[in-house]
Image 1: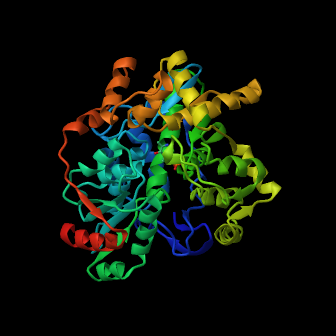
Image 2: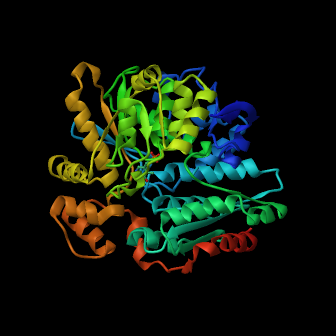
Image 3: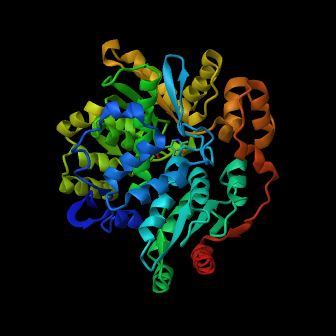
Amino acid sequence: MRYHSTRSKEELYDPKEAILKGLCDDGGLFVADDFDGEKLELSELLHTDYSELAYKIMKRFLTDYTEEELKSAVREAYRGKFQSSLITPLTEIGDDWLLELYHGPTSAFKDVALCMLPKLMSRALKGRDERLMIVTATSGDTGKAALEGFRDTEHIGIAVFFPDHGVSDIQYLQMVTQEGGNVAVAAVKGNFDDCQTEVKNIFSSDIAGELKKEGIYLSSANSINIGRLVPQIVYYVDAYRQLLMKEEISLGDKVDFCVPTGNFGDVLAGYLAMRLGLPVGKLIVASNQNNILTDFLSTGVYDRRRDFHKTMSPSMDILVSSNLERLLYYASKGDCGLVAGLMDDLKEKGVYSIDKELLDEIRKSFDCGYADDAAARAAIKEAYEEYDRVIDPHTAVALSVAKEYKKRTDKEERHPMVILSTASPYKFAADVYASIFGEAEGDGFELMELLREKTGEPVPKALSELRNKKILHDDVVERSAMAGFVLDNARRKL
Ligand SMILES: *Cc1c(COP(=O)(O)O)cnc(C)c1O
């Protein structure tokens, strides 16, 4: 299987190359066309587990990896690193289900993919005389998950930049206490956009050229890499397996998924699972007040010329959902010219629109809705009071949207509802506490403890232990010094 750009079929890449490159030279995203020829054998699901399923699904997409490479990658990525032996357990919330994706080392769903990506990258590097330096800007969650995923990976180093005073207490401590011989972390005097823009500049700078001469290539860990996307397909299929095991569904029954969405990576993985033959009714795209996707899926017009809102669910505060480009490609049956045109419109005019036929095609698989902060707070409170569940603000957005969806949809068209739960409530303890019990004073740890006392929900070990960890990274740099920081660390650590 070979990959090409969403915007052109001219150049073809093997999966390993696509993983090392991340993004296509023309700005498009890597896609493959013929992964869904042979449908999933659902009856086999009953005799499998997460690791085996991960191997089977990754094998379809990453065809130039050997069986041993993939199996050892799965083992190293997940064994002993997740607090649940199921990796992503499915638990009840009223009549619906929560797919708990946050039991990894940093208590965020990004762990599921970022534990795997470094394993795939290091195997792709084998036999090449190259080393990689990962450079990532973060508004909080991605940075820590990437650091933890890449720590002590051979021939790969990582530098993470976050905005000084721009992340939560807990997120700050998670990053500056990061251990590992190949990691570098710095706060930047500026906001997240400054970090992100400068990281993009570094990729095309003289410094990238200089490092290349020394055999060091710059790469990124962001969610458009197929090495992050493919591992996410697994938990959709595994959720179905768990419902089968619980005898909540029979083979072939459909299931609906409601997904708290930012960059559209998570929900796109659900779409790929559906293309593989997973019986899905609807994929419901849940947004916060930055509801550009709700508008797009309702009208066919994607218009980014609007205000940006800072919300209680920061990982979904996004106006350009990169992975949507892949859906446009697949739903238009591989029309690269169309996708390239739409992306040009977005870049030049800030807006594009699709015709009714394409929108109808997309709406066969997708539904949508949004919840503002007030609705998310209400959902957190209701989840606790009615169902005795403590959920984070991102999950709350999805829960609220799922409830609305059920209200407006005929019973015959509905199916068991799986809500993707993307972060531990303790990562957002202050907002969660305030939503349930009202405002309280205290720092991140005090509120974590208060929330634990009141609800009895256990605190993930890695979060409670943060308090006693040594601060290992105290660099604060100007934006103009970021490139030098990367150069220096790449040379020292690789
Ligand atoms: C990243 C993130 C999301 C959004 O996922 P996408 O793949 O970007 O759509 C939702 N919730 C949490 C907690 C996240 O960290």
